Length: 259
Ligand SMILES: [Zn+2]
Image (cartoon, rainbow, N blue to C red; front, side, top):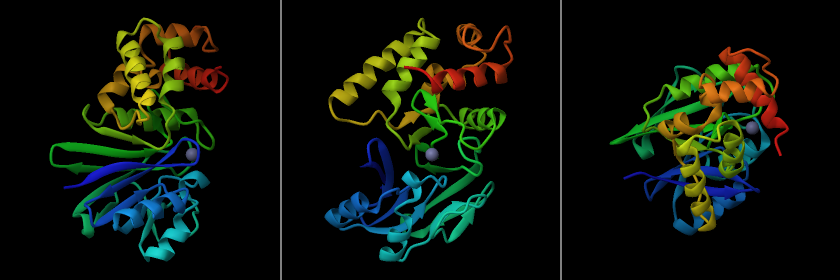
């Protein structure tokens, strides 16, 4: 039986941990300290590290963890990340024997040039660790890639089965929902999502994982062909265009400056 839990780090990061009570895989350990504390407290041993992209809040703990636990660290082959022992990319399969699990790697550039995601299937459940590419009701900023790359990466994630669980690396959902409501105020599922997210946060709980179906129903960056979203984008820089890429680009730019 595998469990997947978030270890909070920094202000709003989640280090996702898959574990079977004996061994664990850590995803995007930006800080070793909270992870080591949790592993020690539960007497669970780290078996492997997965990293989605090079930003320090996702990779800063890798060297310490790799040394302390003497474990492999996988990271994107198109990025240079200290202490990554296994460079991975599109089409690679990672086997973690201690957890009896396989993860598929896909390239999802845009937030960074070499960003990857890790997909897995458990009995009755699919999931994806998507780093800073897809967030609850939002998407990552364009730091290194182009809008067309990020849009394509998001579309690939959107084509996963609707019940795929989405393990984002930040708790940004409530702020993203406020932006989504500015884009699409008449979406009833969005209003429901805002109420649900608020209740979870008020109870001190994460809004994640999300699910691909929920994202497709509420995330404006996955809804760039919806008439309400097109009209909102046209009011914010997309001019008269209804082209999906133009709409996406305008939304991403608008979100950068959204209150
Ligand atoms: Zn990042």
